[in-house]
Length: 231
Ligand SMILES: Nc1ncnc2c1ncn2[C@@H]1O[C@H](COP(=O)(O)OP(=O)(O)O)[C@@H](O)[C@H]1O
Ligand SMILES: [Mg+2]
Image (tube, rainbow, N blue to C red; front, side, top):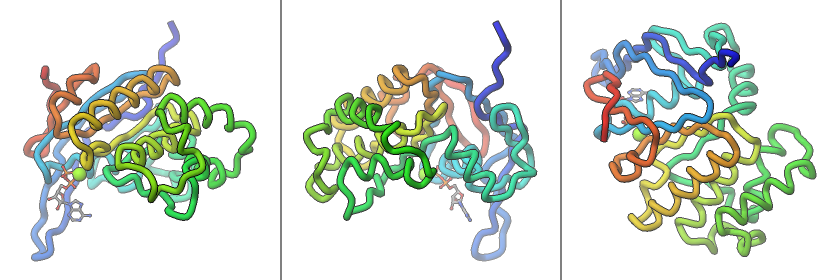
């Protein structure tokens, strides 16, 4: 078997912020973490424990106070903001608590937006978008605008949008935080099935233990430290 690099690794990452009164607040301390191809992991922790901060670092949306981040075995520290953005889009998809759909665009147009932004051929991705629409049970809403959809449907559009460019890694920050329990369960099951079908790894940040348990491996963030746990 050839040795595969993790998709993302964090080496001894610490992150500090300045609070409004000038104090230095230590949010993450000496974190080591790696996500391998096809792996699914959950990260839980109390509100304010640094979960989103950690995801921002994984996604290259912020730089750490100290430590190193590697994307597919390469250090990200020398990359410009534009290079980070281009590389990020080539292998990572994001899902947030708020679906952030463009209200004027239809469901399909929202899903295809990352292709336009990346300057790729829309035709090439149409079969994939049709499959995602069906798998996520939103194919009947293809031409609707987001306003006409339920909260669960909107988040499923956001999932399709995150998956359209065939990312090796999906990073999801409390993606079901606005959904009721039943819809949250359905949404995560669909997301997991799609990650398996399309060979995407998944990092799921969630407060919900039942959802976290669906992942292969679970971590808890507490007092700035990331700990592997059995849920
Ligand atoms: N850019 C920032 N500047 C200052 N403080 C921040 C910044 N981002 C996050 N924090 C602080 O870091 C802590 C962790 O925040 P966050 O990562 O959003 O937590 P979580 O996602 O677990 O709720 C909070 O105390 C928050 O106020
Ligand atoms: Mg958060």
